[in-house]
Amino acid sequence: DVKESGIEFRHMPQLPTPKDGEEYLARMRSNFELNILEQPNENDLVFEIMGVDVSFANALRRIMIAEVPTVAIEKVYIFDNTSIIHDEVLAHRLG
Image (cartoon, rainbow, N blue to C red):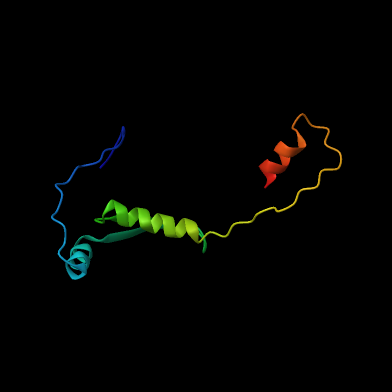
């Protein structure tokens, strides 16, 4: 629940472990709710997922983070460093 003081979580009683994947999917389909709140541009989406297990939401978050491309600097050549930061520290921070 969202309150004026912040978000307050309601603790729900733990459901029994599903006996198989079919029961898990049926339970998830009955409770799953996805609301798209806004889409500022074609690369951004603000949404909320309700009625799913925390582990499922966390797995979805990890998958989305893993799909973000990253860039790495392999070699740094410093010719004249006049700053107070040592060359090794500066190269490490860039890479």
